[in-house]
Image (cartoon, rainbow, N blue to C red; front, side, top):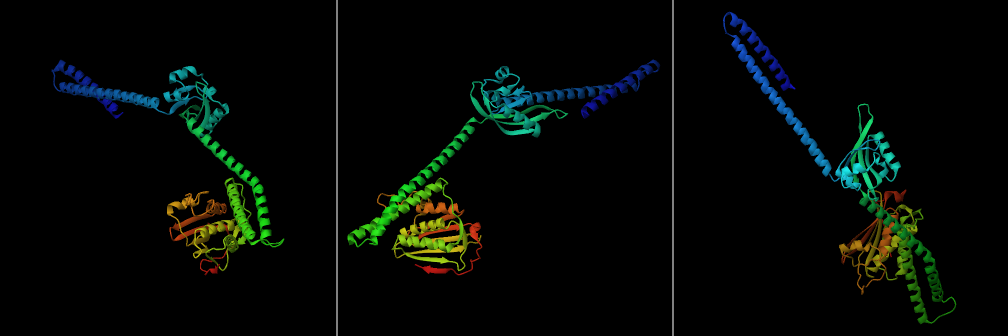
Length: 453
């Protein structure tokens, strides 16, 4: 603009000076001949030359700007046409104002020209659900933009696909909607993959529930004959109906012991299946934690007469816990049974309960047994896995003790962690969250009671 103003001023000045020089020169030439008027003519000519140069420069700059705009538009068009994502501008009545090649490919057309020649002015008929399309325009008018709008559409070949659209509203000066512009991309693969994953998850949950229901239904059929075996073998061992031969007595003791062991294994399998199928619910109450620990200790002592020395330490003022006493005792008993299995009769097992810094209740069960490598600790918490999986393994069991204890603790919102060293023993830490502790005093500074069994 400044250059144009200088051009016009110079041009006018040159014309005025030149005209003045000519008039004055003509008048003087009539009287006396030429003098300073020739100087005015020279100045006017210079002004005209400068004006001509400015005009040429302005014209060149205008041409350069136009060429740059053309190149910019061509570059934008080149970018849009080669983009992998579909670009569109569509009027509210459905008329296609502008699209790129990717948009046409998404809808199954070889080119955008063929798509525009084939579709009507109202391409809403390609949408499977017209209500969804109305919702698209309703959101656009209300919010001025639409993000990740999912629709199902028909391609040219009749196949239905899922698309995701992002668009913004373009308004005129009065605020009326002129058209929308945005992008679209095909999300059929992602959508079908997500649906397949959800279906697989639902199928897995249904299978787990069906398995839990089956095992729960079978539990009665399994337990009833076992209870009969245990009951009658116990009756005969106690010789309530008269004396029996000592050899038979030893056989009955084996029958009773193995029957009880089999019943415990069946109960563990049933409990674990119910937890997996989300069919096991807690029967919650409030109880002192030392009762659950004592219950677990008695169970382990009843199952194994040659248990190692068992030391239990609890605070003088026992914390009260809100939870399922039977299930917590079962979890602690499973950890203790695992410790007894891998600890020699002359070894030591300690159980210590105390409050953590965050108010949680911590139960630490440590043994002086054989321990295990650090890389096998995670396997110990997997169901039906054995640390020693060889055919000639020394230790029996289904591999459900620690996994079941872990699952029962998690049902209470707690956590179970294992630390172990080969040849030095294993420590299992159980933590119950602070919200499970009921009216428990701060016992972190108190000396615990000690009981030795």
